[in-house]
Length: 172
Image 1 (tube, rainbow, N blue to C red):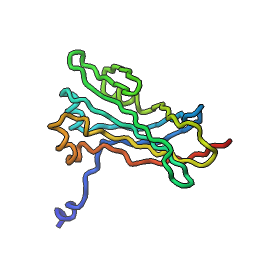
Image 2: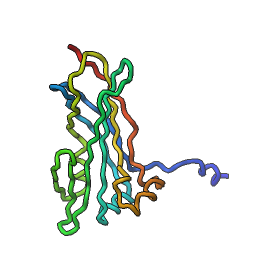
Image 3: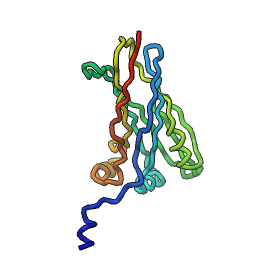
Image 4: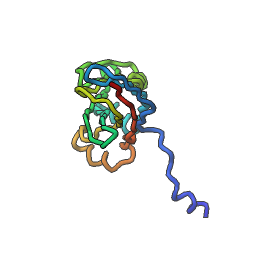
């Protein structure tokens, strides 16, 4: 009987991505966005990384007009993680900026993007209420072809955060 009672329970996962806080400030025809997030890779993702597989993380942002929910702007920033076995270092690439940073440990690399500054070009925005929707996801489509299909169906590769909504106002 005790065996059957435990069958419906799922084991808690100790990996995944989450966005904990977002602060937004207006700049000239853009928004400065500061995200506090938490990225934890699964054992399978860490093992693939340590065996030479490059992992791509996408930060997706969507700006909506709160009155009619019209999408004003969409943007995605991608980061690539790779392990360099000869130097025993981890490398982070910001695809938008084309910048590379090297770290001695994976936890240092992940900590470096836990507190992230980004800019979302918006053009002129009229006064009103808006929502910034954000999410983080592991881009399985950028994995090597033989790994893509198993990654889509394995829970060890599901790191995606839920969409989080951050309302704010723009005054004239």
